[in-house]
Image (cartoon, rainbow, N blue to C red; front, top):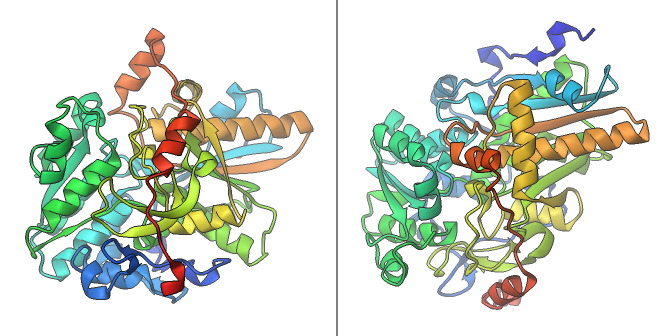
Length: 464
């Protein structure tokens, strides 16, 4: 019998983290700066603060190991259901043939937030700092709609305007997400759109263009630069976003301690890197400090957008037309247009500079999985754990199952932790296609990757 007190672990409200965990000082190599696209040199402070709220820019390069979370934000986190539960997947374990306590699968419940994902952890913070700065609103892009929903709630909470450019593929697949954003008071445009000069260039050529996060970012940046009372808001990739997500991992570590456990394996899906890093951050730090050097930390990406497994570690634009900052990261090239897989949050061409450094130095590793196999795992998860997972979340579910079954085959004991980053109640189309047998896999051809990588910018690092 499993101890019922060890199936779900809740933390009291006073255990909401008081500080964000900054990993920049612990990285195996220095994190490269963001570059200004016109000069290919480190972007001046005054330029970056015209894009992002000032406090976020300061956090982007901060070197303090801990950065205090304002009291007002900690109070607002209660609205996001922080601290979120840590749960053991007992029913799922039994369904895949695990017995007893030799192999345990735990998941961090970020799906319980009002918008259904981890994204609110940074959305609320960015809206808070924008309000403190006296701004009128924030402009952003969104893939699957989780980030757009989160920022819409953050802006509504702080009394700010919000405009969202949503990739047309997801805009059509997930109308519920658009409606939720509009209920929060946001304006939502299908991207590419005729609302911006950049979007119009794509829209006029193909009004059914599925869009990409790179194009949507370009549109949001152009829109944000129209008025000094607005700023651009980003839901992943950059350092300050990953910093804000560390509340997830800090809570998970505390909950594992309460269980007298420590994970042998930590898993998360990888789009830009925020949900993966948010949960994995304290375990990465412990691995870097050789406190737990053998923890296997795994990112799972789709075969349709394999930036970590088939891309290149290089300087690249964060958006499709080169209007925004340039980052050094694993990338498929900014001209990459993804296939319309349902895991919209994983379709981005690039990845976080922090996560890229960790992957390059083999502190963490990446596997690529197909759409049908991960959705199949999501169906089993829903049948057993009762939660319909987002397609993005299906990726670590599938990999947790793989890791557990491999451990069983080898006769090993193993504790597995993954981030259940979001629910799939707005992703019914993916499951409809799976159940009807019409869901298809996409594997990005090598020639398309080579063609996209040929568009990478040239950067002379000796100049900075």
